[in-house]
Length: 173
Image (cartoon, rainbow, N blue to C red; front, side, top):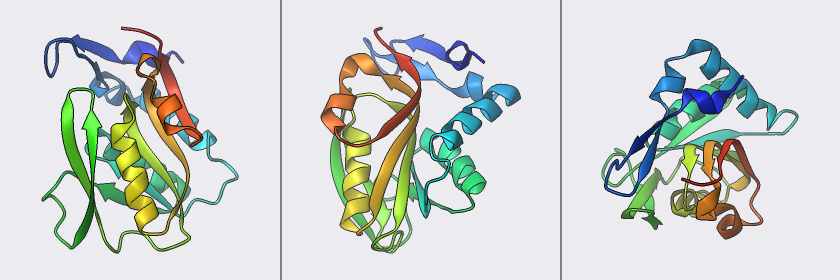
């Protein structure tokens, strides 16, 4: 199935010069969503995974489904002030600004093997912050999974040697 054909590009959103990759069209297509999740799960078949980390907000969708399919828990990584318990935080740079992410201090245990999931890999700043959060709590990040990777932004090189699994590669905009 051509998953890339199920992604809509929205120019100049959220600001001029950005081409937003809208996954709502993929989410609304049951067979495409099923195929997306089957492909993401295949990337970690045979691996021991103790938890799946989902990055706010679209990453929650894919992380929750993957966690369910793997029979493990899902750990949300959120923007500041959104989690109700004590948190740890990491700052990061986006392709269009900066922000920080938080995780509950008890979300992971030392030695847990985790996968980080988001809908899109752009510059790598967001996932890099999530990696630092997981490692602060002693978890072993065995890989990161994305529906879409914007290859032209160079995140793969920035995050090397981290294992990155992406279903759709966008070479240029």
